[in-house]
Image (spheres, rainbow, N blue to C red):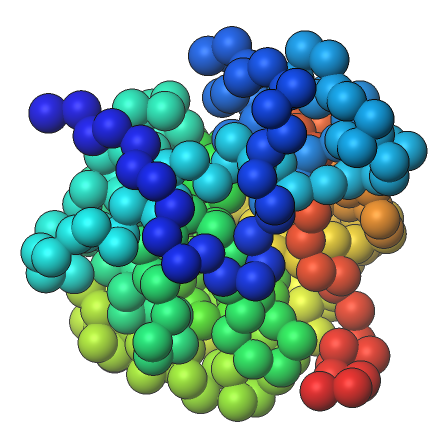
Length: 303
């Protein structure tokens, strides 16, 4: 049964004000583009037909996309267990066209997001959330988008690198997809996050892969990758780099693919393919807004 969007109940302070009445709702195709673009969307690709003066007051700077919040808050109405909530979240992502492949749906159903967010956090809300140390866990739709983009490079036996592994959620998904004969490596430069993410994985369906060594969570500067397990068929970067780090390009296997947000204030999710002859092709998938890929000291400033 198709779930209907529910009204927002007791929204958090981070949510935007109500949508101005003079803004017309977007078409279904625009809604999907708005949904895919993440927590922020830019006026250059605004889904609204004719923004009013109050909407354009930021002069094309990224702004919260009000329609992005129509789906996430349904968790307030769910009384089922976490497994059912996680499955319902995946079903919604499938209905919106974000999840298209069976493999991605299965792995996101298997790895319960609720085990990878801080206690008390709304685990099944489709939005990014803080995890401490000036870091965040991406929204489920961004995880799904990246898994879809990398699916062909996450086949059994392949090697995957997750830069900025945070709570370990996406690393666990990678490990389940490449299986015990493959390798999934998560690198994170905050030791406390590596310790907590290890505990998260131990409670998840990927625990046996951690115990067997095909899944690793390591303290390292993600900008340098992890050459010990290179080359990688798939590389995911969970923070925005001003430019693509050369060590990551070097560690990408010929025929492999990297997904990385690139930019400072204005960012694009870029898909980097290394051809068999070693040449590189880059295409932009969508506009996004990620925390910066930086040094540990810079990230912890003010924390």
